[in-house]
Length: 307
Image (cartoon, rainbow, N blue to C red; front, side, top):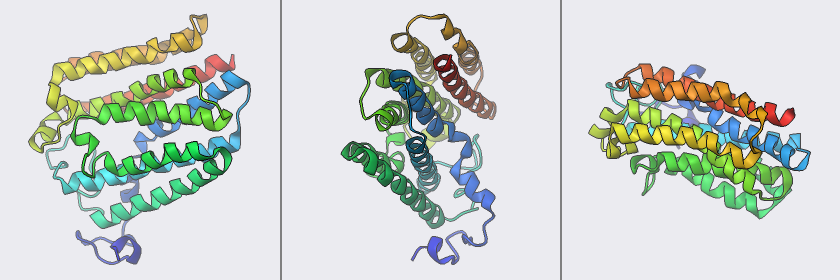
């Protein structure tokens, strides 16, 4: 049995019983969790906007499922990138638990499977409430936790990372949340999902721009590697623009759109700074600011609907 279950020595000489919790927190990448929380938050707000009500119990089930899927994805990514040699000493981003030897590959894989089990439990509760559409959403999401970096067609290694995030952390997550809340599919949820997905995909683009040299040397063909820096920055700009343009068909032109000015201004600064700054550790700060933009955007939607 894997050392995750037995607590025996792993490849790097570590065991789950001997590891401080901070190693698991490091592998879980809590700073990425806004990408899981925001689509559910916005989906619930949008459901209330469209129908006049929302269900707290279903919201909690959806949120917990999304969070555990996100953490599972991060665990798989940590281990698989190490297997493929994508996390090296030249890395500009945060330390990775597997590559640094803090956790063994088997331990991280085991942790990912436990997270998938937890996500499946909440998925079953949602299935009991809304039926087979939850399965159609959940099964691909569960597989792509692994398939993002692993499997026969690893999306992150084929330049499909941004598209994956727009679809699954945007369109699927928001429309799925609205469906779970209302039992109905709304075009407004699809459009809002695209906007949330674009803002979330900005995180992936910034990460790939930071790591472009390391990724190129390890055959990780992200869009930044395949297209080059200038086109990758153009894509970053287009996703930023699209996320705010999408507000108009959903909410119309109204004075409350001014609530989005803080997020809009922050996004503009992020794109400007990245276009003028060579890849380096400063990009980690840009990533944090991009996550803040996502939260400010969700807060603006909430405030506009509430008022």
